Length: 339
Length: 294
Image (cartoon, rainbow over all chains, first blue to last red; front, side, top):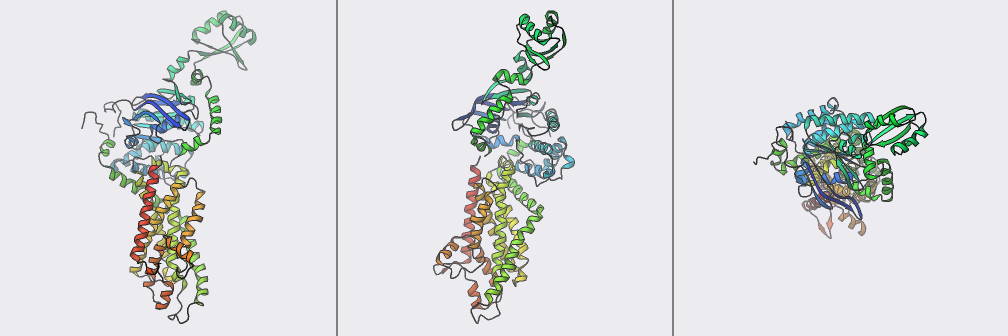
């Protein structure tokens, strides 16, 4: 069975996800403010932002779980309001919270999913073996899910989300609450999936390093998209590399940097840090013109952390801190989202 | 088919019609209920403890007390009060098992599986129907275990009686599961289960005539018993039992009263019809409640 979107098989016409001025209001609060973007078939698209930025609300609208207050959203060519069932057939969902039946075996969970999504009976056994093998749970198919670790449950949910050959797989914070090793395993499976199924993947994350796995990223903050591009282009748009240096005399080196290059260096226990455009060409000049002896230099490309900082003026951690205060003030926001 | 048509198996199936999809969803929810029941042996055993205690401890105690107070000259030997209680205790088994099955929806909500079902591309109604069918099956199975004890309280294993009782048990199980599903749609958390037990299940049980004849009750109690849907299910079961045992007409008249509206005896068919109608209404409300929720 060849999933749609592979070379040679006609893919769905138009973008896999198409969003125009999408709005969601909860009372006076605008959780999502006129968001617009497209996701191409086969693309891995990431929504990056702090908790409470509107990521989950947007994904819930795309999955037809929450009704938009305004704007248009189409998934796999169908409107999320008027074509709700059509959309649901064509998407796979992996939520933040587990939605497995703990008292059933892994295989029973998948079989029931196949029943709910009307997977043709004849293709269920093959498809079931495919997805279970992909996430490395084939040997555990007869085990009761209650005995699974958090990482195994998440893998099983990813397998289940793929069982009915969806066009678009939605992963809402696929690695949240998992240890770093399990997180990297989950990403291994997602990478594998991209290679094998040529499926469109739409994911949300608030981990910067995870966003690097995406073809394109939208940075969302306070319900709005502030930037949208490939990770490389976003980092390039920051335009500056981080140069860290250790010198014999940090104080006079900092003064010299200010005098000769007009750069404000920040001092830390590791030495001095400056941000410059074109780090490679800056370093030779540094050696030639800085009078203070230099013991080591390193250049770092901007990270998505730097990107987030550039576009929002805050680090993602600061944004989360202020967000959790906001949530504490209005606990009904979370409560209403759970419904 | 247009040139753009995608020929994945999923596409072909979409044209296959919704009814079959909904039927598969009903079957899935039903089978899940059975699997979960079968795996939970402890639940099967513990939910038999209560009816057994009622029948053999409370029943024996009441029996020895009552036999001394029966109208003189009843003849034909004293009737065992446990024989009278037996259909009530069977109804009780159905009641508790059905409610527990239905209210497990709240656990499904808590642990997330409800969401997996609600986001599926099937009508919500099919999920509710599957749940009610599953709960009814499980409750009937549980009550059949109680039915096996009939001989111990002098109820004969007549095939006709068993068929009648099982039929009435199925109806009871369906009505109560539908009612429980309506309650579950309103319950936000697992803790509410206690509230349902105290305010719904126990009143339904005590007012139904499962434990005492509905004859000669104070007006207020008689009125409450008449609006208890379970009364209209316990009474037919009791009539069925009394048709198959040998007691003197006077004793039978004492225990086997039936339900009266004024001086009119409500016929068995109408009793069952009323209960079924109540069940269908509850099912409708449950379907509406789950279809509305996002």
